[in-house]
Structure formats: C-alpha cells, structure tokens
Amino acid sequence: MSGNYRKWPMILFLGILTAPLILMYIYLFVDTVTNTPPGTMIPNEFTLEHWRFLTETIPGRPSIWLATWNTFVFATVTTVIVLVISSAAGYSLSRLQLPARSFFLGGIMVLHAFPTVTLLIAIFLILQMLGLYNSLAGVILVKTSLELPFGIWIMKGFYDTVPWEIEMAGIQDGATRFQVWTKLVLPQVKPAIMALGIFSFLAGWSEFILPLVLAPDNKVQVLSVYLAALIADDNNFDMALFKSVGVFYVLPVIILFVFFQNKLMNIYSGGNKG
Amino acid sequence: MRILLDKFTKKFGNLTVIDEMDLEIHDGEMVALLGGSGCGKSTTLFAICGIHKVNGGRILFGDRDVTNVTSQERNVGVVFQSFALYPHMTVEHNIGFPLKLRKESASEIKRKVDEIAEMVHIEPLLQRRPGELSGGQQQRVALARALIRRPDVLLLDEPLANLDATLRLEMRSEIRRIQQETGITAVLVTHDQVEAMSMCDRIAIMDEGKIIQITEPKDMYENPVTDYVAGFLGSPPIAFLKGQIQDGNFIEPSTGIKMPVSKAIAGSHAGREVRVGIRPEYFHPAGGTKIKGKVSFTESQGRETLYNVTLPDGNILRSIQGSHSPVNIGDDVEWGIDTAHILVFDQDGMRI
Image (cartoon, rainbow over all chains, first blue to last red; front, top):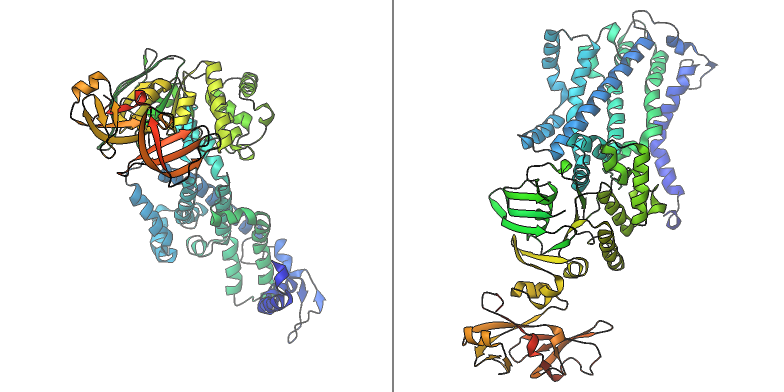
C-alpha cells in the first residue's frame, strides 16, 4: 500500500489540519499543572494547586469523589440494565413469534430516532409525581429507557446472524429453549454484548442533560453536572480548575477506549466470525 | 428401533405439504428420502425429530407413540446440512453437550466422548474448536454428537451437501460404516441419487409430498414404477422416446424402428401412445435392434464415454460405452438397443 506513493505530503497535510486540535489537547493538560502569566502562552511555573479538588471539597460543591461515585453508579447500573433487557428483548424479537412483533420493531426504530430533549418536561413531571426527582434511581430509569431502543436493535441484528440450525441442534441434544438461549446463542453474540456494554457505559458516563435537569442536587450530582456548575459560577471563575476537572472526567473514557477499541468496532461491523 | 409414519400430514398455513403419508422403517435399517427440492423430504425429517409439529396422523418409535412428544424427549440424533456445531465449544464439549444436559458425571462424559471419538476417528482433534476443523472433520464431530446419547434414530439432513467431491466419497462410506457398526436405524435426506443408492438399504423416492416408490436401490433402478423415478435414478439419465404400440411392437415414428414388447403390454395397450425409457448402457454398437442417428454430443468421463445420438425427429438417445468408439460429433451412426431392458410407460407416466 505505502510503496506506490510518497508519504510525507499526506502527513504534512493531515498534520496541518489536526495541529489546532493537538495544540488544544496539549494545552488542556499543560494548563492543569502550570501557571501562565497573562499575555503569553509560555507557562512560567509548575503547580499542583489546580488539582486541589481531589483532596479538598470546593465550597458549595459536593466532594469530587462523591460525584465520581455517582457517575460510576449511574453509568454502571444503566449498562447492566440495558444489557440484560436488550439481550432478552433482542432475542425475542429476532427468534420468537411474538404477538405484534412488527409493531414492536417499528416502535423501536421510531423511539431510537426520537430526540430526547423534547421529552424532558414530561419526564420531569412524571419523576416529580413518582417522587423520583433528584434521585439517582430516577435518572437511571430514564437514561436506561432512552438507551434501550438502540441496544435492542443492535442485539436483534446480531441474533439474526446466528444460524437457526444451532438452535435446532441444541433442542435435539435435549436443551430447553432457555438453555439454548443461555448456553448456545448468547455465547455467539458475546462481541455484541461487550460492545454494547462499553457503549452504554460511555454514554452513561458522558450523559449531561438528563442529570442536569432531573438530578441536580449536590448529593446525587454526577461529574458532567459538577463540571458545568464550575464554569457557570461567575463569582469564583477558575479556568485552570475547570480544565483539571475536565481531564479527570475524561480519563476513564480514554482508558476504556484504549483497551476496548477493537471490541467497540464490532458494533459497526456486525462481526460473527464462526 | 422401528419407525412408523401413519397417515402423517403436515401443513404450513393453508398449504398441505404432506398428505397422509405412510412410511415404515425397519429396525437397524438405513432409508433414504430422495427427491428434488420442495418435495417434502426435509419436512418429513423434521417431523420425525420433532422440530415440526404434525397436523395429522401418528409417528411411532417402536410401539411408542411420539406424535406429541417434544424433541428433547424423543432421543433422536440429527446431523444437519451445515453440521451446526457450537462454535464457542471445543470438539470435546460439543460431543459431550447432550450428556452434560442430562447431568451425567464428568468422568462418565469423558469416557463416552473418548469412545465415540475413536469410532469416528477424531481422537487427536478433541481440544480444537469447530472453526479449526476441515469440512470432513466437522462432519465427523457432528456425527459423534448425534450418536453419543445412543439415540433410537439417526437422522441425516443432506449431510454431504457441504463437502467437496473427494470428501463426499469418503464420508459416504464412513457414514454407512458407522451406521452399520452401531446398528442404528437411520434416515438420510438427500437430492443426490448416487448418495441414496450407495448408502442405503432402501430408498423412498418422493415427489410433491408423496412417496412414489419405496424399495431397494437396485430394484428401483431396474423396476421404476413411474417415469419420474426412472428419470431420477441413473447418471447419465435415462432417455425417453414417444411412439405407439402396434402388433406387439413399439414403433418409433421418425425411424419406423420396431422394438418388441411383452405380450401383456401388447395386449392391453395396442394402438395407444406410450413412452419407452432406454438407459444409456442398453444403447450401444453391439445392441440388437439397430437405430440410425447423428452423434450430437460426446463427453469423456475417463473410463467411459457418453454419447448423445439425435434421431431424425430431434429426440435424443444416450449411450455410455466403456471403450472409446472412433466417432466424432456430427457422425452418422447406427447403434442397437437391447430391447429386453426397455421400460414402457403410459401417457400418465405409469410403468406398464
């Protein structure tokens, strides 16, 4: 591939194109550990004071560790529920003769395409009535149900690629339909479960608008809301602190991506390599 | 174990695929269900193993009525066309899976798997996964998995269709050997007459959901009950000529050639239109009743050569000859028909 054209013009072109982005990333990190005098771009001293939020709670804000824990719980519980329901619902839609199957399939498509924001007020009222406003449970429920159409659709697509004959063979070998699903079919869609799991976790981790509206309280605050509150606070404006919290917030995402990017690609290539 | 289908009927929606079919398979016998696609042979197979519910009639294993017994409780081993191995399990776990479901002990499973692996010659492959096996090896694993529970019946759904030609030949004799070693009652579904004839004790030939004839391969080849059966068996296929019965002879209209037929046919069908079937091996230079034609096609199959001879009215006779005759396409030849072996059919295709 690389033998029949010169590489450097392409590298130069892409380099110029991405230089602003790379510079921003570099400064995002550099600014968290240095101070820079006004009017210049060169930092003049090294400092860890911008990371003080790790050890002390900033006045008027929840502890960063509480917010991190909330975010983690929010993302994890959402992921688990999405995985359990999607893998069961996807199988049913793919393989079982359900009443109103095509209605459900169509409904899932519509819900998947539906813009979340338009539902916000209705959801707010419902949670208010149920007493779930300002609670993690409430916002988890909402996020899960909005993630589900995507998850079910993806899982159904993967189940569709599993050959029927494997299920017939399982039945013939004496397995019940439930055993066929858990022991024979689920292992075939493991790549999809991995990918959907990571995807849901990242979606939960970066969710902003739902927790902001439905669970803004300090006790249940997640990192995205914490971060937004920092920059909205005009009295104690601290750009370097904001950047530090941002780096802290984005680190798990980068780590997940580095480790699982191959698995994540599965969701787009539909891969069942048998 | 004996299998009996008694007035078995299968419908898909309003479409009756199989209507009141009767079929008895004796204990230890291997029977082929032979037919083109859509003839109902696979439907019958899936009814025997319980994947399809029947819409009428009974299915008996021995004296036990299994019509309404679930697949799981029928004790039937099935080998699928695609082998349907479980890709995430090793060969050992694939074969042992039916026993594991029965909650047999690990040591017992191990012993039985080793035993059956030896029989199908896959001992060195037990720790591999299906993806790392060749087609023939996958086939052997599928057989072992079907046989490990000591099923009452072994069902084979086009088991050789996914193999290449050499493997097909090898597995044909292997499947037969294993079936005979275990003495299991087996049903083979196939569209390939060579498979059916070489592997099975009896062939049931099917068309449009009905069994047209069920008998031993040799008998079916020599005494087909309809022209459909005659045309299905034999490669290269039988050739048909149209003509009339007159004065104890079949008259071929374009050449006027006469072929003597039996007294019974001469009597019952005098003056009527019939069709005669002539197999390629009964049309050759040394044959008795000579007929003229032009060679329109030759095909060397190595040991034998196949010739198509076009008669003046465009009908084609086929001839297969062991030694290579010095004739080319376009040559006029006068070869003979062994009239003792011609098969006569009436206008409805029934043998007379």
